[in-house]
Image (tube, rainbow, N blue to C red; front, top):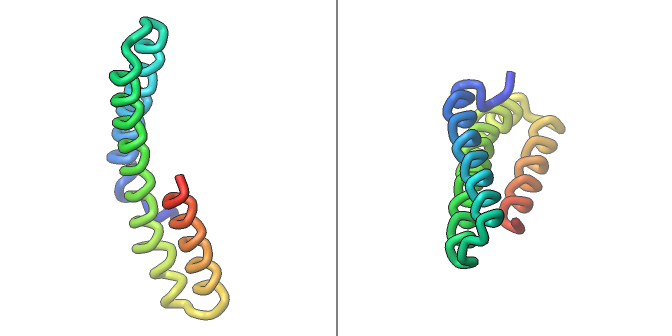
Length: 93
């Protein structure tokens, strides 16, 4: 079972909202909207996706990593490395 199962509906709602924002940005470009206004919307869409990413990461830590830590051994080490790599990707983006 995936860690985000309890938040699946909320995550999907947020993703649909972000999808709508991206479509809105496309329309803005098609309509030759002022650059700064487009950039403002790009920033909002980026924030929406970051919120989803952080929620997924939190669920992963609470469920997958915590469960692996309880088991111990190499499984725990692998989940911790996996979570660290995911955090690093988020920080770089």
